[in-house]
Image (tube, rainbow, N blue to C red):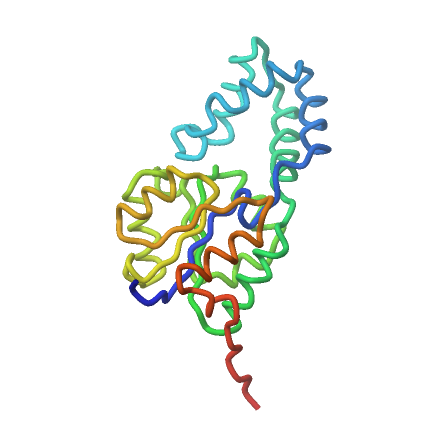
Length: 218
């Protein structure tokens, strides 16, 4: 195995927890729709939103049309805010590990399929995003996982060859795509962080779990 010089994280359900049920109920209330109709419409165009085929101002009207209704501009503003809250729960074990890597001088990045308003809302809420060496947001490139090109963009942003990058994502197809461009990859199960650590050990990467902080200046 090539030496790992950078660790690249997915955001949703890797650095974050699953969608927040309270925020979801708030979205249902704002939309005025039955859950089944809203759920289907929310996901119908999500990949297009992440890839910037649709942006926030065009995604939400599409959601409404799919569900047989319309949203006012105020509803759209409130839905965007609630959507950010939906994905704002933090997976503390993974985030804390990422921060320990950063303190040790290991390069870290984020590669996330995410829309424009979601990115703006999350980065405004969490200052810790700025500690990552590079964040690759799908909407900004009009690309999305598992398209191979977005992985090369992430590697370029990290100034690290793909074969020296460990990528962590919750979806198998995204890990397969990472492997296809030469990255090491681990599929993450949010319900079992211990299994992730065991897999790191089995791959000979256990040393990444115990990074040594860089000495501080005097």
